[in-house]
Length: 224
Image (cartoon, rainbow, N blue to C red; front, side, top):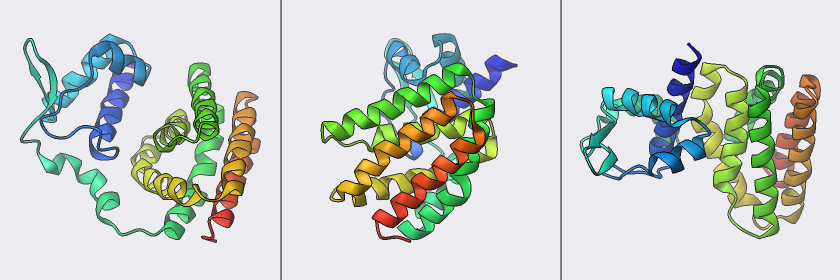
C-alpha cells in the first residue's frame, strides 16, 4: 500500500516536471534512473513503478536500449487538471491571496503528518534557497521544491492538486523580489522560522510562520 502511494506521488512529480515546470517536451528523454530517483528522493524500484503508471496512461514510452521518453503524440487531455492554472490570466494579488488561504494550513498539517525524512527534505530545500540568494542565483526551481515538499508533507491529495497555482505565485514573487532587498531578507528569515517550527513539530507555529511569510511578501512586493 505504501509502495503504491509512493509510486503514484512520484508519477505526479514527473507529470509536474512536464506540465508545470516545462522541463520536458514531447519527444524528450527523461534523465537516467539514478539521477531521477535521487532528485525525487525515491528508490529506483518506486521510480520504475511510477514510469509504468505513466506509460500505461499514455504519457511516457520506453524505447528499448535508448531510455524513457515523453510521448511525441501525448494526449493533451491527460493534462486537463493543470489547464486552469496554465490558461488563466491570474495576477499576483489573486495568486498571493490564494497562497494566504492555502499554505498556512498546508504547513500546519505537514508539521503533524510529515515523516522525519520529509521534514529533513524541507529543511534541505530551505538552506538551498538561502545559498542561491547568497550567490545571487535564480532560486525559482528550489523555491518551488521547498513549498511543494511542505504541501506533500501534509499528505492531502487535493492540496497537491493546487500546486500549479502555488508555482505561478512563486514564479511571480521571485521575479518581483529580485530588485527588492528587504523582500529577499524576509524570505530567508521567514523560511528559517517555518523550518524551525516544523522541525520542533509545532503546527500552530508553522501555520503562523507561513502566514507571516506570505504577508511579508505581499507587503514588500506591493500586492497587498
